[in-house]
Length: 193
Image (tube, rainbow, N blue to C red; front, side):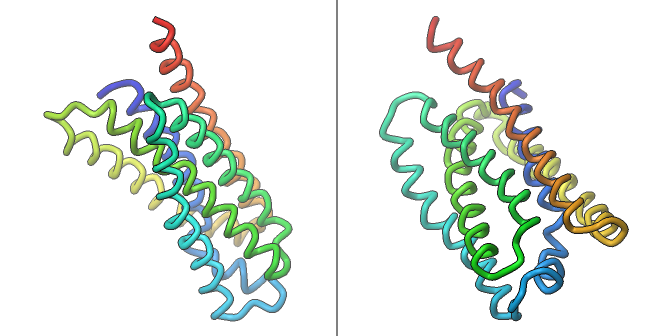
């Protein structure tokens, strides 16, 4: 397995795995902390994030594909990953629907920026004869990491607070985003040769 694939897996393990800390209890957070939230409001919050990512990632992918090489993919991957990480810190101040919905939009935007570049770069370094294995390794590692963090996150929120949990998520996500810098070094070193 190429080193770049390992870096991308590690990055997603930190980013996606850290959000796994709150994923199963996010509705509980909203009910306890967001003034005026209803079950419909919770559904709208999740819809905003998913709809934003779904629509905008197609536009981002089209734009990044217009330039040869991976420069745009790397830039959008890094910006999107950092944006998702920062959104986690923003949840600390999500006390009303406007703030919550704005954060959900930004979280979707971060995913839309990050996803197309991540897939292009990962696909570029996969060996054709090992494609199934190398995609399965990614899926298994990230899924196991997220499964592990689900129980841990609920415990941390119960013992400490959601604020502590969001600080941990943001910090771990930023660590995951920092791994992308290693890919920049690798890609740009190749361009200068």
